[in-house]
Image 1 (cartoon, rainbow, N blue to C red):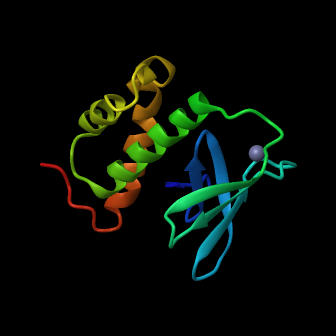
Image 2 (image 1 turned 90 degrees about the vertical axis):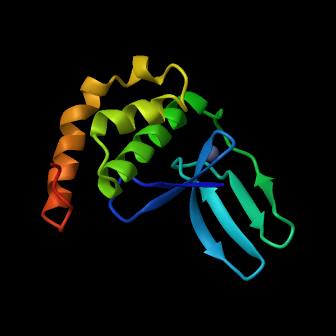
Amino acid sequence: MEECPGQRDGSTIYYYDGHMYRRNRATESSTYYRCSVRGCFGRVIQKHNLGVIIQVSPHNHPADQDKHSLRRFLAAIQRRVSTETAPIFNIYQEEASRFPGIEKSMPFESLQLQMEKRRRLNESMNYPSEA
Ligand SMILES: [Zn+2]
């Protein structure tokens, strides 16, 4: 189960085995997730003591690895641009090396403006300025 920032600020989505989930509820021993796709009843339970994730009801749609790779790639860059001082292009290249072929679907130019804007917003919150 991998955590990614959701589309709304402060929201979180969970990625597992080609599907995205929202956290439903949690007890001491288990966390319950349901599919983030509207109308799908796919559910998994994470058993903390056993360290396993159990699929309890199936999805009504196929897993989409590609779409989720893009989303995870974008989330990783957004997170790093917000929390690190490294140049945006360096962050892009480092993350792109973890997702083979992603530069074709999401080139740097398509993200540059968005990421520069994100960084400027952060600067107003005591972000250290670049030399
Ligand atoms: Zn589903």
